[in-house]
Image (cartoon, rainbow, N blue to C red; front, side, top):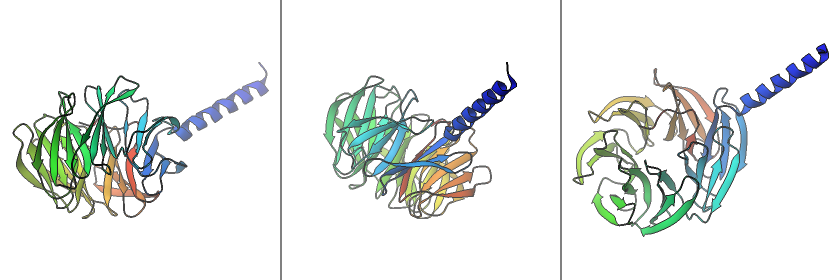
Length: 323
């Protein structure tokens, strides 16, 4: 085989590898006020691309098969499916009205959309590919974040405008109960043992712990001002909680229900994503148009990356487990 052909083949392979590397480890950041998605290279922190999506993309999550990441465009009234590796648009589902926060039940049979602006919750059946609307439930003022029980029969919704949490039966759409909590409840998470709900009280400085079976608050864990959202460390014990006003992130032990650590982060830390090895935490900073990269071991910010206005959701494929 001619030497020139070998050189050509080698050049082609190198270019192919470089092209693949350019799309490897893409970080998806939602710029809510810019109505854009910014893609970053997870290793170099460089921008890969920025493209428009519908108005006010706030939250995003992977599909159960991990073949897509869904961007919820709340004012655009649609779901945009992206390739989780490259960030490229795969397809769109229109007429999903005001999908502010979204979630799949653990058994993957239900898809829920909390409509903050429209004061309702929409429940869809999910067959692995398609969504079929089954219930549209009015739910007071500003239904916000959600969590599920392990049995996948109940979704729990925070109601920011009425300082409450509601439990909805997924099959019937019946609101089983509503209880008062602290001011402006936001993020909500189920503990790995399925015993307690953790609620970020955004109008105060604590995580409210609810025994959802008895519908009673059992503890308030001191955190920081503007306690907001959760991201598990993936060890089935600890979770991060962001505090948007105090510019901190706390580490909560979900067994002892104690605050066991603090990370200082500027600019209104909000949504978080954790690398698979648990070593690096990415955090959107709502007030300063940046994303922070944090070394978990040292609890230090190692990089601030400029993005768009009011960055909210953040995602990458090679992430740690969410329990």
